[in-house]
Structures are given as structure tokens and as C-alpha cells.
Amino acid sequence: MVMNPDAVRNVVGIIGNLISFGLFLSPLPTFVTIVKKKDVEEFVPDPYLATFLNCALWVFYGLPFIHPNSILIVTINGTGLLIEIAYLAIYFAYAPKPKRCRMLGVLTVELVFLAAVAAGVLLGAHTYDKRSLIVGTLCVFFGTLMYAAPLTIMKQVIATKSVEYMPFTLSLVSFINGICWTIYALIRFDIFITIPNGMGTLLGAAQLILYFCYYDGSTAKNKGALELPKDGDSSAV
Figure 1: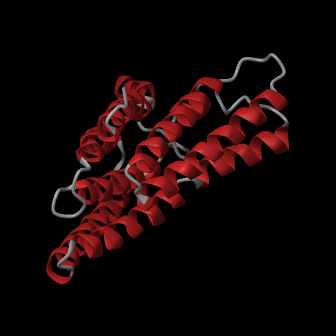
Figure 2: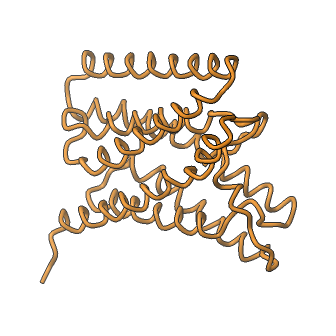
């Protein structure tokens, strides 16, 4: 019996939704700590502002009038968008005024950018192909920028010959997540989903290889994966 490709794609997409949901929740312990301490200390919201923008663009990309048959892209990125809003709200509630102002400034720029993209695409592009091309290209661009974090961590592992700040579980789950979404994109070929998730799969595999090369039996700390970066730290979740 030959399975319907669309049915297989949906199953893979649902699995990808579940894994991605877990990844979105991975910073939760850090925010629980912030609430308990009522202080963000030296942490910055940059990775969550970046993820907010990335999720918003993917939600827009998956809408029926931009790229039809992409509801699973909307569901997971819509969920991720709500989670990021919650993280940013917690940060705003406990951050000092200068950090609040900075966060609001960046968030305002992102919202203006998203509004400009939406208006430009809806008013200037009148076919699915044109709309998918414009929004998909932006998704790939900003999604690719977010891979600076894994590259930074990998560089740190090589320099220190220690996997202390690259937890095995997070690397493994990220690798599996990349595989799921790459398969999803290839079944009904979508270059814009394939590129970032293909990159994610390769980086995940590279992280696992580094882990086995440099693991010395010490326990990798979770805080490297869960904490908000401190000032001057370019890593992201």
C-alpha cells in the first residue's frame, strides 16, 4: 500500500510541531528564576526579540494567501510567537528602565518592519509565487542569521575542548527537529523551508560530532542552553 505523500507530510509536520514546541519551552527555567528573583540581572532579551521576528515572518509565510497548504508552519510558529511574547513580557516586568526602553525600541522597529513587509507584499505582489518568494526570502535571511549562536558555541567548544556549554540533549533534539522539517519541506518541495532546516540539520550533526570528540565525562551544564545571554554575549537559544 502506497501512502499518500500529503498524509506523510502532515505526520512529519505534526512531529516537527511537537519537537519545536519543546525547543521553544527550553528557556522556561531561566524565566522562572527571573520571576522568583524579580530581577533580570545582566541578561538581555536579544535572542527572544530575534525569535519573535523570525516566528512572525514564518506565520505570515504560512498564511493561505501567501503560501497555501502550510498550516503546520502557522501552528508552530504562531505558538512560538505567543511564547516569545510571554518571555518578553516577563523580561519587561522585571527589567530596569534603561533595559525596558531598549527592548521597546527594538520591538517597535520590528513591528514597523513587519507592518511594512505585510503592506508591501499584499499591495505589491498579486500572485502566490511572488508573495512566497518575497516573504520566504526574508524568512531564510533572518533564520540564517539566528545560526550565529550555534556557530559561536561550536567555536567555544573547539577553543576550550569542553562541551560544558553545549548540552547533548539540546543538540540531539535540535538535530532531530532539523531532520523533521527538512523531510517535511522535501515531500512537497519548498526551498524556503528546506534551506534553514537543512542548515539546522548540518549544524546539529556537527554539534553531535563535536560533543563526542570533546566529551570527557564531565556533566554539561544546562545553563548554557537555557539562560538568556549576558551583555556582550552573542549566543542565542
